[in-house]
Length: 160
Image 1: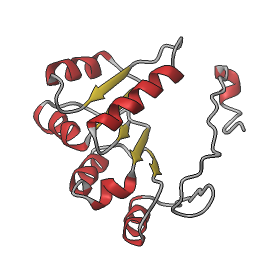
Image 2 (image 1 turned 45 degrees about the vertical axis):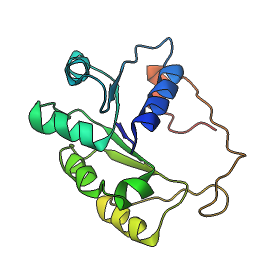
Image 3 (image 1 turned 180 degrees about the horizontal axis):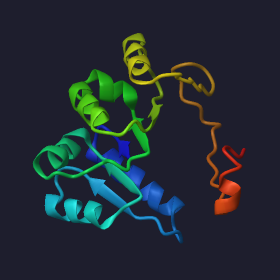
Image 4 (image 1 turned 60 degrees about the horizontal axis):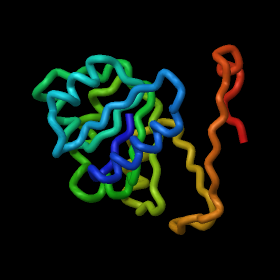
């Protein structure tokens, strides 16, 4: 599951995920305000590999429509600085508590000491990965996708 602060960012993330999963048995659900909730619920109930959403809409689905997130293995907070500083904190924590101890990935171009302290309280054995100068975007970063067979997947964790 990927959580982002805005509908527009959710759409961008889902579009990129679909590109990366093209040709694979990979289904997504976009869970944002402004779209019909019934369609979002149906999509999730049919089974998806990835949910991309905003905190408010996801809370609505959890509270009012009994959407289950029991099989969530990875919880991604994009723009974690915004998610934990600007009014989303309680919603993010409510979603976090509803999950079955997933691996947590948090991304941000910048991070304040206050947010860093909060993220440390959410995660045990935290690992910080920084590319370039702290709190500065790095234009030299390139992303690659490498497919692995099921057999090789269990032996390989990262490929550069």
